[in-house]
Amino acid sequence: MSDTVKPGYLIFDIETIPDGQLIAETKFPGLNLTAHEAVVRAQDDARATSTSGSDFLPLTYHLPVAICVLKVGIDFKPQSLVCLDAPLYRPHEIVAAFWKGAEHYKAKLVSFNGRTFDIPVLELAAFRYGIQIPWHFKGDPKGYKDKSPRNRYSELHLDLFEFFSNYNAYRLAGGLNLLSKLIGIPGKFEMSGANVYSMIQTGNYAAVNEYCSFDVLDTYFVLLRTRVLTGEITLFQEEHLKKEAHEWLHAESEKQPHLKRYLEKWQVP
Image (cartoon, rainbow, N blue to C red; front, side, top):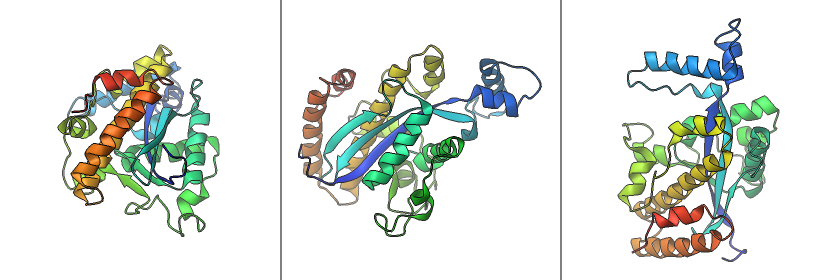
């Protein structure tokens, strides 16, 4: 992989947990609940009022515990895959590193449901920690030509969920997992977002970050197929890029052994 190819895309995903202390202070003041007790009670309340039985809490109560980023060149070839602030995984540092990297590379952000969840969570985290991101709100004349990726229809952030659902015109059942499996990519195979809180409770930050990196890889391959739809690459070029990515991941797995598990689930024809 040539280091001279300009980065064109930052494909990212985050994992979060409910902030039990914040929930205790704002939803259940005066009850002297522990952080975990507050989370359990809030999840019970959410489940009771959900038509689907979901215990997922509003994003305002979420704290990032993992952010993984795949840097991709303008030639659509992967350049690096990192889980921020590994192996310490400190929320303040991973949030600061994300915003610093986004500003530095000035590449197109690519996410799956990032406008609805990931970016708002990261904005609130920047607010919590006092991280300055003026370019995100106002645009950067040097790199973004006075445009802001925060604009919903900005070309500086491609949310693949919005791409497929035509900006939420219909419900995209199955999500990233379904889209991945439609094109022969692993998708979910070890855990899901529902397992993140319990994994963090046991201190298994590494496993959560590995899971996050797998979602980022799925997002990359879904991105490639969408570029076939938009005519930016041909199906033949996509297949070639996938084979090159397979080789890149195989080499990268020597430094990041967890990637071998992803490759075991994905056999290139």
